[in-house]
Amino acid sequence: MLPLACRPPEPPRHLVILCIDTLRADRVGHLGSPIARTTPALDRLAASGVTFERAWAASSWTVPSVASLFTSRLPHRHGAGVAGEIKLLGDSSPPGGIRPGLATLAEVLQARGFATASFAANPFLYGRFRDGFEVAVTERVSAAEVVDRGLEWLAGREERRRFLYLHFMDAHEPNHPPQGYFEQFANPGAVPTPDDGRWIDPWRSVDDLADPAFLAHKDRRQAAYAAAVRYVDDEIARFLAGLARLGLRDDTLIVVTADHGEEFWEHAAIERGWGDDPRGIWGVGHGHAFFEEQLRVPLILAGGGVPDGVRSPCAASLIDVPPTAFALLGLEPEPDWQGTDLAGSFRRADPACSGRAVFAASSAYGPEGLAIRIGDEKFYRRGGQPDLRFDLARDPGEHQALAVEATAAGRRLLSLAARLEAAGGTGSAAPPLTDPALVEELRTLGYL
Ligand SMILES: [Zn+2]
Image (cartoon, rainbow, N blue to C red; front, side, top):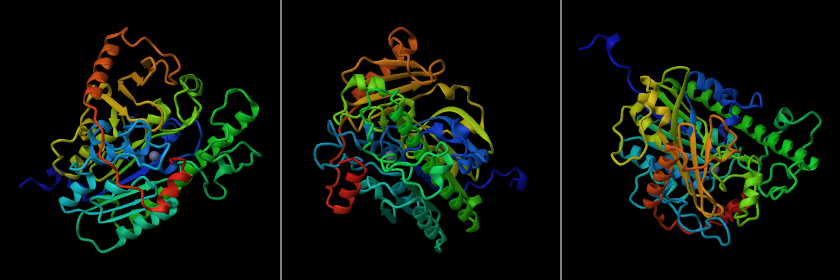
């Protein structure tokens, strides 16, 4: 028997995943937010754990991206949100669901004896997204309510290991943070208008990007978003304090991430030139393009077994969360997961991990597309448009498209894109939308 000091530490017993809908990485303080004080709680959590500086969502909208998080598969494999040409417009047909037969993270953990619960404020997370959760509540409520429900569930008597999934919706439009938050981020004297936090943005098809009235709106719109992010961050601080109060903090692996980011007109000009969004919208929101503001997300791991204060340069994807979490929880991964166990990358230095390929696919609006990043090389294919390549080291804002075939990296990206497309397919039929309240929620959010 090994002496006590030589035994490997026990893995954490519990898993908590906190998903902040619509949180772009560059509004997170330690990931380079130009706006101060947006995420003090996430910054503290990252300082006590591992944060991935190059994490990508698997798509730029909720359904395919959360399905990737839940199945460790890319969108063309799990099929959710992939079926159909235009998935969110024209009629009330819902986006395709996760293919039957693919076990979700909750189903796998439940089969291995975990108690499971999900409290999700995004109305899309119904159907297969609820499978495997013994308690699954999908309701558009505030972050405070999501946190209250999560803590209440954790406080119950339960001997089994636990998996809790919380999904926060407050950073998703419409952004209406509680009183006092907007003022912390707006220019002095700015007063929010009813339009500033709306999904159907009054400037959704702006032509003059220098119009002073537009610029004032853009400032207020971003202030409303930053305020909403800070509100969620404050609630996450309250959740983490509650976890500690329950005595579970040291025995829980905590994962914080987002399903996609949000655009604030960074690529309005090129999107206007494409002119292929059936809504006639460009420049704002998400689900319509694969630029970094929509794909790059935070990914923080903290808790038992995770080292302190590691800033990982590894390329990471949401599909890597299940195998990484399982490694840290001391569980064997599912054999057919597509993601990679990243735990090894921060347990030992792995210089190759920053150059591994990560992928995104499945647009909500307009033609299908896919994006691939290898190191600082990025490839973006959008149906009906010339392929784009960017050097993210020299051009992080993605404003200078380069010739794709001019380099070996470009040719590798093309060949990867061909392989990904050849592996494509359609998803299962999603359950019919029969709940009037859910239909109304999706309509309010601009999805129907
Ligand atoms: Zn989302």
